[in-house]
Length: 132
Image (cartoon, rainbow, N blue to C red; front, side, top):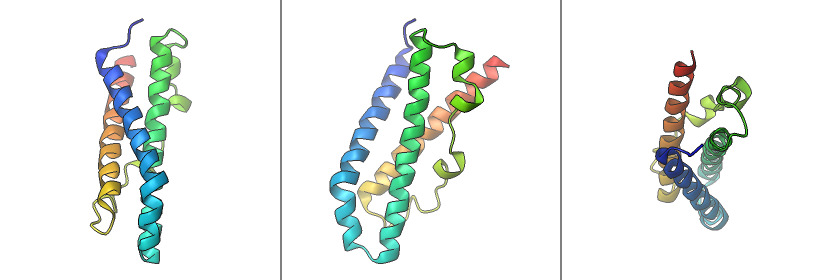
């Protein structure tokens, strides 16, 4: 079964964002955190983990949908409770996402990962509604 065009674009977007986040965490975030005061550095670490959580959840969900389109699993199985998008409490928290004290690069990753996570959550909800 061929994947819908939106799926390929969304998967590519998620993968690109994941690589960008990885590079940011590996090369920029540590340096910026060392320059920051203790509490600001801790907040940066927490928000970096939030980006990672969002992207991990999104990629796991997209990989499950890819398996459906490849005929490896049934759509019902992909939308069963253990395979659904999770981590809503952490991933949807925006408490510090727009904090001007956070580096611009991290704020950008927070904003874009949130947008992607919310889009996938809406898509999953639509799919669940169609099933019932």
